[in-house]
Amino acid sequence: MHFAYKSILVIGATSAIGYGLSEKFLTEGRKVVLVGRRKDLLEEFVKQYEGRYRKEMMRYYVFDVTRLDEISSWVEKVTKEHPDLDCVFLNTGIQRGFNFSKPSTVSMSLLQSELATNYTLHIYLTHAFLPFLLRKQLSSLVYTTSGLALVPLPRCPNYCASKAALHQFIISLRLHLKDTGVHVLEIIPPAAQTESHDEEVQPDIRDRGQLGMPINDFIEETWAMLMEGNPYEEFPVGPAKEWYAAVEPGRKYILSKMPQAPAGHQL
Image 1: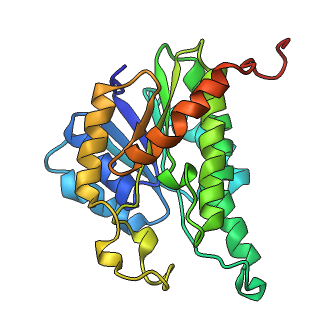
Image 2: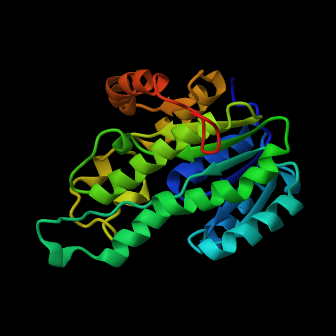
């Protein structure tokens, strides 16, 4: 089905992809509820559009979703204040380089932070939002993963592994929810021109200004694909389409031969 949702909560709304898609949702007439850690960027978004759109079309929350023990109470607050939400877009992610041939250079605390940001907090958020979304006739969870969830890049092994874990979780979640009104969508980007490649976080990357798909091109292609829809509810964008075509058909065939019932059902 096409992207029919009218009230969208965007987690990670201050990042390039989250910010750009929030703009696109708004300009296409959708209400956006923005979530991020950087209040200045959230306020900047609202000020940019406050003269063109009604105030109730834009809301924001300053919240750090890595505070896992606060997620449940925060979700309860947000869903009470915005009962019309029908789409939750989970768009957090960080990428760091690691070289395990030099163990002394590997920060395990940084590795754990990357794993929590790219995978664990998505599971917490999914668990917290599902009771609310399941009560609706039609709703959706949308995730941003990566082409590197399909084919790893050795310079960032933990990023690739965490995105692969999220990709696998999404596949199973979609099967868990297939008889409900909750649709599970996955956006699979290629490398894109975002702040994840900035020098302050990944100083070893060269030619960063030319690295990846221009963000505006990514946003437009993603929106067009969402509006068109597809039966798999997976949306590889730009160069990620080639990787997806090489990997996913075989995976889907094997999956179709496996038991698909969740735990608690007789196999």
